[in-house]
Amino acid sequence: MDALITAVGLQKFFGSFHVLQDVDFAIAKGEVVCIIGPSGSGKSTFLRCINQLERIDSGYVTVDGEMVGYRRDGHRLYPLSDGEIARQRQAVGMVFQRFHLFPHKTVLQNIIEGPVGVLKRRRTDCVQEAKVLLKRVGLAHRADAYPGELSGGQQQRVAIARALAMKPKAMLFDEPTSALDPELVGEVLNVMKELAASGTTMIVVTHELGFCREVADRVVFMDAGRIVDSGTPGEILENPRNPRVKNFISAVL
Ligand code: ADP
Ligand code: MG
Image (cartoon, rainbow, N blue to C red):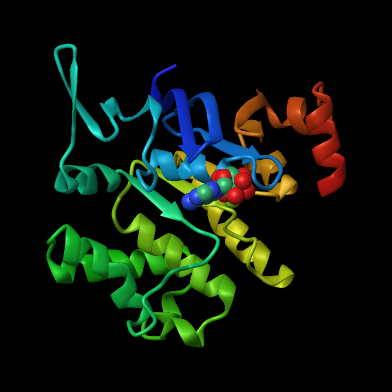
């Protein structure tokens, strides 16, 4: 497999707590992987390690062939500078449970903040692209609204557009619909379905098993810091061979 993101022997501790225990993972370009598992199993920490929001204690992560956080020179590894890490992190977009939009900026200003402020691209180009993205997430008519004027589902769709504005190579979603009222979940999942259908490489931590069944190429089950099982949605969700997976799925349904 020509992997876009890999994790090899990934280990992470919080103090003496071993939160990620030897995680091996790979996702190909264009693939959609859903990660499910009980609360506290390390799903968020895993995504945060990929996106360098957490430091890795051992093992490594690569994104598009580059080792995350380090440069290899012969047999030696050198830690990257903060600036190099910031550049690397742009390759991966992340959407969180909470939307983290800038409250005092309009929807459009939120979306162009990264490309204009960080990538130093021409504002007029970024505004054009932001309008296309807003159309894509169904919010073309709300460009001048402030986040506080939007529903949670709309805010999350803006957060997705904002991440896409950086043209990332992959998108990570950490329970993007968990904070939403039930009637707003579908509009966010629909945007994610469209992204998946258009070939976006996506890792999605979610409890929405219907979404996993419909959209995932592969479902990964994490428990207590390990990947316990992995397979097609049919293998993991319909006929789980692993008793822990079986228990989890019957509890979520
Ligand atoms: P999940 O996303 O699967 O619910 P997390 O990755 O958020 O799991 O957390 C895994 C475990 O690590 C939990 O027991 C959590 O309390 C602990 N944990 C997460 N972040 C920290 C932190 N910054 N410091 C200490 N413990 C943490
Ligand atoms: Mg989590």
